[in-house]
Amino acid sequence: MAFKPFKLQGNMEHPSTVLEDLERFVVKDAPPTVYYIPDFITENEESHLLQQVYKATKTKWTQLSNRRLQNWGGLPHPKGMLGEKLPDWLQKYCDRISALGTFGGKTANHVLVNEYNPGEGIMPHEDGPLYHPTVTTISLGSHTVLDFYRPISAQLEDAPQTEESRYLLSLLVQRRSLLILQDDMYQRFLHGIQGTHQDCVTEKVANLSAAGSVPGALLTRGTRVSLTVRCVPKVTRANLLLGRK
Ligand SMILES: O=C(O)CCC(=O)C(=O)O
Ligand SMILES: [Fe+2]
Image 1 (cartoon, rainbow, N blue to C red):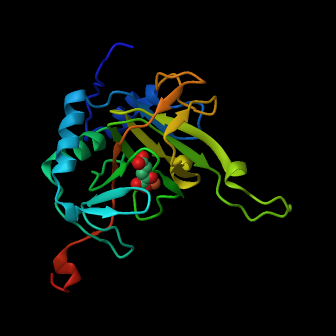
Image 2 (cartoon, rainbow, N blue to C red):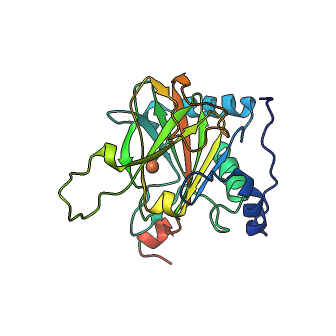
């Protein structure tokens, strides 16, 4: 496939118009709603973003058992996030993604940077209620496969629910793509990434053709850095926390 960077002029004054433009990127074989936009950023932007991520001081990283992360914008909290100004290199992408109408006219103010080495992943989880129910992800450096699961249900039958039995579908997320999850794919289903070195592409990958792959393909993972761009609607200012006007 010829390399054609994604072009879509976002317009914050008419976010719904732009969401209509996004319709051609809807993944139809998945529950509502997944938008998968290949080549959302150029190769130059990808290397620039990776440079910025790796410029951060060592203390900016939090090492977890199966990945490491940087948190930008503040720590989301039920009582409100104490907002921190985003660096320009992240603000630019928050603005660009928000201009697509993804956050209902609001602007993203929070970015989680996750780094996964081959063999690393993230347990199935929900992103929860602290965010506007939309998650958008830019992938850098390598593809990954994101797996979706039905929630554990209160059941009357006796069959135990395994991760395998709850498995719904997968999305192949290529480097430089933008993934947008909303509605049931945000609110209802869980998502996770298996800690493997290679992905075998199956028919359960709902965005096969958009991601330029075929069933049976074997994809070797490199180090992937993801930028998870979200909007935390409830933000507090330091003064408010200190009881000042
Ligand atoms: O790296 C990804 O694409 C997923 C990250 C994720 O699920 C999260 O940060 O909540
Ligand atoms: Fe998540």
